[in-house]
Amino acid sequence: MEAFQYRNGWLFCEDTPLVDIAREAGTPCYIYSRNAILANYRYFRSAFADLDPLICYSVKANSNLTILRLLQEEGSGFDVVSGGELYRLKKIGASWDKVVFSGVGKSPAELQLAMELSIRSINVESLQELEALADLASQRGECPAIAFRVNPDVDAQSHPYTLTGLRQHKFGLDMEQARRVISILRTGEHLRVTGLGVHIGSQILDIQPFINAFVRLKELADEFREAGLPVEHLDLGGGVGIPYRGEKSADLARYAGFLKDNRGDYKLFFEPGRFVVGNAGVLLNQVLYHKANHGKHFVIVDGAMNDLMRPSLYQAHHEILSVEEKRASLTADVVGPVCESGDFFARDRSLPQYLPGDYLAVMNAGAYGFPLSSNYNSRPRAAEVLVDGSSFKIIRQRETFEDLVRGE
Image (cartoon, rainbow, N blue to C red; front, side, top):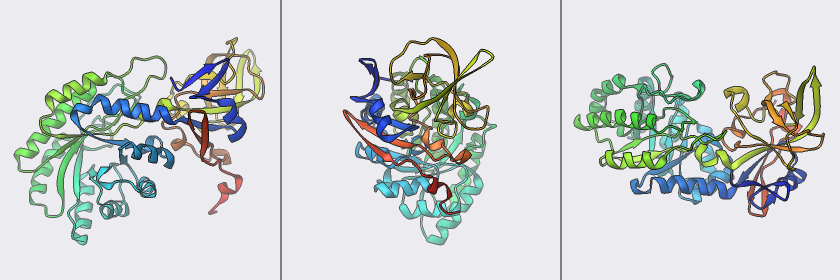
């Protein structure tokens, strides 16, 4: 992570020592690099520049309003999966012609909100959703733009919980179902089919599954056009991963080159999330205790699985760095205070001899960190901080005990 480096023995985010942030914002807290987020977005945009795509940042990856505003100012559109995410975009004054709405369980209220906002595309994922949307559109006398999310049955070779493009998954219409809706749509009066889309999973570093999915999607889009349905865009989803433990980065140049040669005249949409924010953030923790049981060592920190769920949920690997540079001297687990054996950030990791009061950072935590956090064990959720060069600001206040019972 280029934004996080040691200088004179201390870990910095850009030009700001993490220890300074810890002393002012407290711990645990999420720290994001403004310039890393922008650099990642610009790199993705430049990789596909020849295709002139619509890039819709995936709000679920990190939905802090400050980050959404930052990306909007950079020209990004947005991919949402809930009414709550649409509400966040209303708060920042999003451009609705750059917003797409995905998800298998959109409620009638969410569909109605999407129509009221006249978003770019409602991505339909089932026949019953299509019927519900058609009924609402008829009642309102409107004709919203829709796309169909297709399940291409492509194995992305990722964690089972992050795969979404196989026939056993809940997402999208299978290819035959998608073909069967052609006759329905040709006679429909209240829906405009403008696109088809796929999203085959997350944390994918091999480009070939993306290519395989595109080939199947374009074949289907050509069939829609031959039947007289004016498909204009192909939404290729997100899912491009980041290296968490030294893996080779995804070959975006190869992907872009293939698409340039094979897309025809279709407009392309992308929905990057993790790629934009994943390596731009860390979770900063303070060491509470060092404990040993029968030769097994535990570094107990004030952050926990309710703050960062990925290691427990996905068995995800995150590097652990000391805020004050130290040499590793023992093998230990990094664990939190939550009453679950699954409450850990690392297991059997080579670490320094930490003392109470030391700080450590869980790296590559900018995506699916805070958005997955909870109040389990009645723990207030962490603060969020954005660093810009030598300055930083708190972009989400730490919750209080009073926040825990608000509304009860």
